[in-house]
Image 1 (tube, one colour):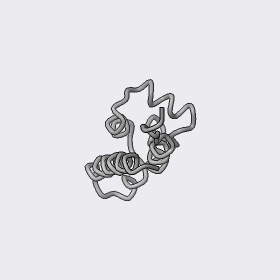
Image 2 (cartoon, helix red, strand yellow; image 1 turned 90 degrees about the horizontal axis):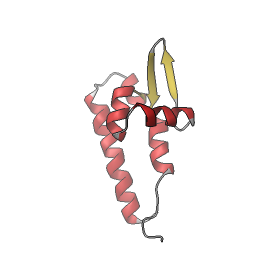
Image 3 (cartoon, one colour; image 1 turned 180 degrees about the vertical axis):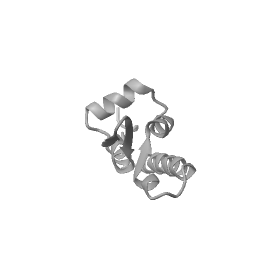
Image 4 (cartoon, one colour; image 1 turned 90 degrees about the vertical axis):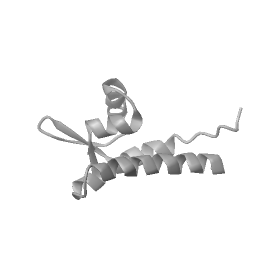
Length: 88
């Protein structure tokens, strides 16, 4: 991993932590986010979020009509998609 990639990853993780801190200190907020929060983190809409879930890239838990998204799987998705922008 290059230094530039590392700094990008750190920025993304800080953004995720900032979003998580906005939702409070309840223990569930440290491990799970709701759909609105995940959409804000990625800046994506319903369709892309559904694709992530269908492709098992983000782990979910559903309670009746509410779906929650695993913070660990979101971080993992970001880490797995680090690209080396220096390669051509």
